Length: 287
Ligand SMILES: Nc1ccn([C@@H]2O[C@H](COP(=O)(O)O)[C@@H](O)[C@H]2O)c(=O)n1
Ligand SMILES: [Mg+2]
Image (cartoon, rainbow, N blue to C red; front, top):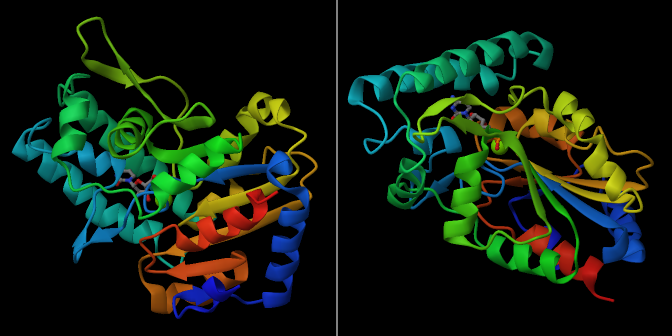
């Protein structure tokens, strides 16, 4: 495939990737399910040289929070994001720090008087963008009735709003994420389910066995992510025939590329588009 020869495409085992693509094509759209991370996988890492916000980052806007609250959250991000992407630490070592980050930031959010009514405006006013070709991917998957699970350690309410404003939230899509709980006055008072952080997606995945059971005839998976934790988003799927893993590597490319190439079938560096994914999906759904 020409699209796999670009300078930002890195593949350790080309034969294995070709075999996997052939297997996905053989199974076609009826055997396929797509599982994708959101922040920096479906959403852009950067646009015109500026880093785009994560779901949490979108809420950290002047529309929603005071300057001092935003500074507090920003300080936490500076400390803990460097741990999230530290290549000298194992995932096991990172987990307690990720829990600490989410617990601290969610406590701050609880005291920030976040209102449901602010969500749409905070998304509208933010610099968030879906990657180029996301809209086409969503349409293609919906047209072929291929289920798309969006599995995010971000904020579910925010990512759903991003997709609704920037594209379309189709009936084949399901979100597993941290959804906020609001009181009758529309004030955020917590989260609806157990915390999903960057490195416990395996637990979240196992909790959604009913979803995977409902689509159990779909033995082929296209898995999209930008973090080593995203590799576990399909842990709840039984009887997997083929799982093609595409990893979007945005940060610290020089130090992380080797470990990403060991873990993901295809690694795309600084790719703010869904072009490679869409090219593969076009082949798989062409029947
Ligand atoms: N307080 C926080 C907590 C997490 N993040 C970032 O969100 C990303 C998780 O969302 P995914 O859709 O990628 O699962 C993660 O990469 C964190 O860096 C944040 O910005 N603020
Ligand atoms: Mg991500």
